[in-house]
Length: 301
Image (cartoon, rainbow, N blue to C red; front, side, top):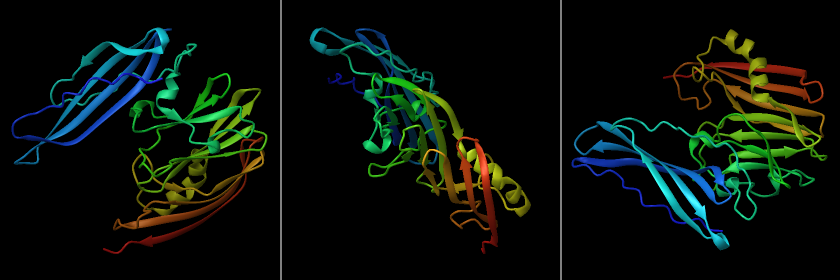
């Protein structure tokens, strides 16, 4: 079933200004009834003067109602537009609240989420990870969802956003245990190679526990990092954690990863690099072994 074409965006045109960067996102919000679907559309643009460096932001938000008639025909029934004042950034107002599936109509998740093949389906076919299409889904809803495949039911959502990807790159990786009771999900960032990893445990068709393993790894590394005296990578994220973990059966995660304060080696500062080996017990929800090897160097001007 195809959705109708959305109305054209009236991008701002101002004398002496040029558009430098524009973006547009459309996301499903919720079913209004058995015959109505609410979409949210967000458009933004950074304008720049032709003869200077001054920047000004423009944003527009729309709530678009899609009506489905007999035979599944879809048409736009209502468009509500809101524009913040000139120079104000468009703050996200709506969040994805999950679909109320209506018989014979497309599921809201089918409009902007994909499973990208068997890697994101559990071996028994019962569970699936829904990966957002970042060219469609707005930033505030750009999450990885865990769902029961049939009948469709959302079971959980993973922490954090998925970084915007290039067309030929995959930002999410998944490892499943053979009995489909455990999944290890890694989210990758292309800009600095950093990774976040989460361990999902399932029992009787429900999420029993989600462990944010990158937080646990950072806690293991924190004492050595503080002793190093190195400047953090960022104030809110002192270390860049690069992937190196394998799910063995449904009982443990074997880790051999690396963390660094200056992963590119470009900053002129004292830097710290650590190599961490560890074993995480799924049943005990703790590390049963770990070892940190750290190194120091100073980047020359």
